[in-house]
Image (cartoon, rainbow, N blue to C red; front, side, top):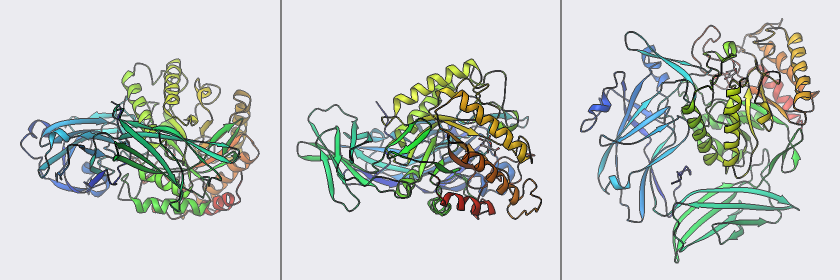
Length: 598
Ligand code: BDP
């Protein structure tokens, strides 16, 4: 049966209890606890807040950089539930893989650290009883995991992870955990899409049930922001026409509420409500159209990353990030390099900010530093059936989870993969056609291209609905030489115009590492001046190139990475510092973006 990834909801048919808070926590370097857990508790070494990334709270390198198995454990009580209800454990994410134990018995597992999963525990629990919930996590990376990397085992048994990507491998229960009580016969998914015709918005919807019971009846109701009913349809699948619709727009995230109802005879047995936006997003020729008007994308590549709290979902940090993005006049961000917490998309819906949603397919070059050694002659994709299976599952789950958000306008299926070989071509072709079957709204699909690959050598760019370039002219290439850098940038764009005409190109990454407060009147690399000069130079070129339809700066804020000769306390390409103070370049880009190029 199809899984359900619907965001947990509390209403007259659905209940939720949060299991967030303090859990016991233990590292398990020798993988001992799984075999002893039945009947025993894991050692209560220490405790850890959920949601949280464990690394930055510790005082030793061993703990911070721990790689291998580790455990979270707590108890919970099951409340009364009826025969018509089922009980589930829901993990908003568990990074990177998890085995779940109830009173010492393994009841399920999940691979992949950035998407939710549910486990049905109805037959294992009784109302009023207390249960021990133990979660065995593992944060190793391998050549066939998403994201990709490698794990080395040292002689003393200590494991070390080498990510094939440029962000710290934070892990743990980084998002919420909850206990859900839901109707046995229920809505497990639904989809929506909007059509605009002669000033009328036509909302298409479809409910997916976990039952084929033919005696059920269905109803969909649409309410505006004031709570006024603006349309309804008495079917499982249908359309609702909205006259004079209030469209969802950038900066004006007007949201209607779609209420889905299921009745058995006259009794309401399930209901699910979600805020939705009425909007269209299309590509025609080399231009993006939001609600049939052209739109230029301006904003950031981001990370889920903050001082101390690592990659864990922190609503206040996100509130700050949205305020900062609005302050700058940004209208878009990419969820580089993994799907973010579900609440982030809800916030973007409310704010009217566009999202390019990316799966955790990063590091598919097989190099520990993608910017230096990313280009290889042998294919990363040869003989990796497991990787493709996992990649498809992540794409399917991301699309299923995020498809009803008006903020989501496109899917990014990989960041900087090797795309020059015949194995890559086969892999990508299969993946792109798979993704295209999953989204009822048929959003555009893309992958972001590494600097060493372009129209000359990539075999896969023609699968993209729009081209996404990560470019570092003036930084990794033509370092410190913006004149040469811009000549190379212009030459590349000219080449693209010939090779793939009538398609939009966006810059999903461009930027320069910059130490806040490092002022250099001669504009040397790493200075605030250089960051400004580089961004100005790129954007001047963009303004003269009509098919460049978007600029997403790398990165919104400085972020944590593994230490290396290229990284001093992380990647410093942020327009904001890690603490969210604007660097001087923020004011320059703010002025540009508030001038609104559309
Ligand atoms: C690109 C990657 C990104 C890095 C960035 C950089 O997509 O994850 O952080 O380069 O080097 O290759 O700053």
